[in-house]
Length: 130
Image 1 (cartoon, helix red, strand yellow):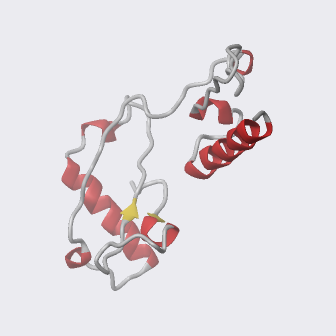
Image 2 (cartoon, one colour; image 1 turned 180 degrees about the vertical axis):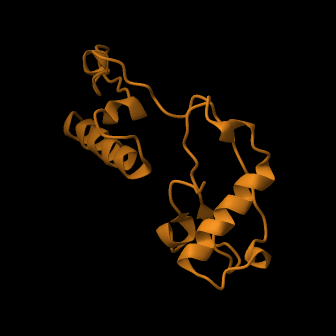
């Protein structure tokens, strides 16, 4: 069972100093009832390496300098019927107060580029109201 993808963060920010190493994010999104919820961290690393070998057959475990795992049971918003009516507006009812949350990306899936887009939109709103 492989991860949901490979995101090379070191390519996203060319100004970031990372000592010549590459920073790779391998997301594993699944329901807490999935058998992977019981996996030890080492099994996720092994699975990621298997996936990397599919892309680059010469990839070896020795290329991995460090692996850090983070688990969050509630990392993805669950949108029940009627959720669209509950998403808060960017502009709050209080003058000068704005709300920015990943659930506001609904119905699109939450992601970093979507949040950057929302942040830019709110920034433009702030500037235009000055």
